[in-house]
Every structure is written in C-alpha cells, then in structure tokens.
Image 1: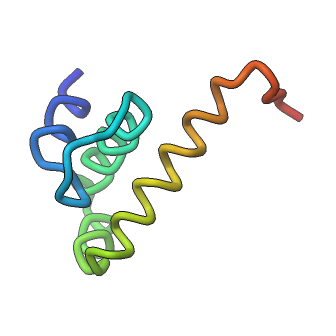
Image 2: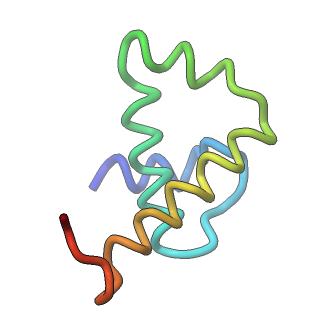
Image 3: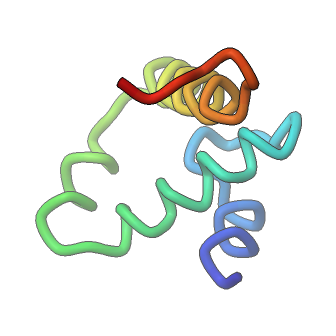
Length: 72
C-alpha cells in the first residue's frame, strides 16, 4: 500500500517506525499530510509534538487489535 511505503520513507516524526503500529500511524499521517487544509496544519506541528502524535496513534492502533478491546 502506497501510504505505508511513503510513510516509512518520509516519516512524519523523522524516525523509522519501531513496529507495525508505528508504521500504520505513519501511513495514516502521510495520507493526511497529502490532503488540502490538513497538511498545512500538520506541517506546522513542532517536532517533539510530532513524536507524541505518532506514539499515541501507534498506542491506539495496538489497543484496537487487543483481544481485550471490545467496541461499545
């Protein structure tokens, strides 16, 4: 999938993904950064906050695959 490949090649937070969940987060962020109004706001985010965004997204992605996570 193009977004995953490009997110890994051009990581939003400037670091290679640590695992599959960070890779997924970077793919989503790559896609968002390619969209009109959103990309300008995401590009304006400080680098330390970018790291936090990727980490939080990866945490949510990991939790979504947990066997204990149940939709409400």
